[in-house]
Length: 152
Image 1 (cartoon, rainbow, N blue to C red):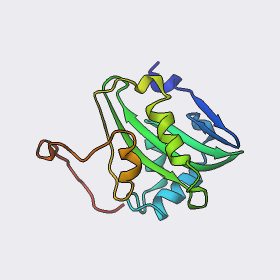
Image 2: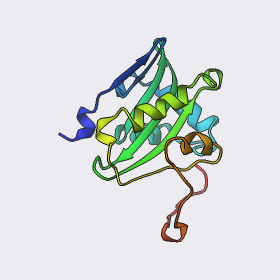
Image 3: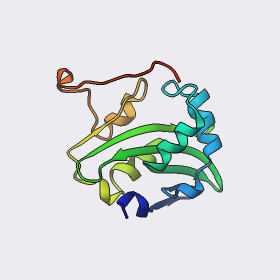
Image 4: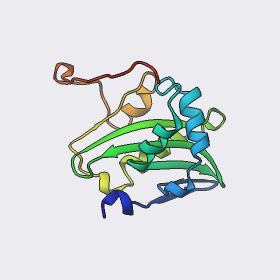
């Protein structure tokens, strides 16, 4: 059994909850948001969302039984984490939920302490992520990527 199979955390700040329990996720909401309201995953197929969730650590943000936010971490649980697909529904923004979500991921999840490197991609949330130690690439000439598509 891998760490991914046994990963389970809940953080509460009434009336909100952040949970890594995949059974709580509203896949319809996640797919709808990512495929139609995000700039990074426009038109992403639902099956791809489901597979990405299955193979990542996920954090759902909830008010009562309703999901209002999401983030996922791709990791080896030893040295590296990639933060992806972060969102809080528009009507819940401005309440500190994104900051709380980042705190739960980066400061309250023991398995993620001591990583050598974290990375993410963002077009518009630099201010949020800078609060958690992210900076522009120090040596972008060392980074490479392989892109096999431009749109889903």
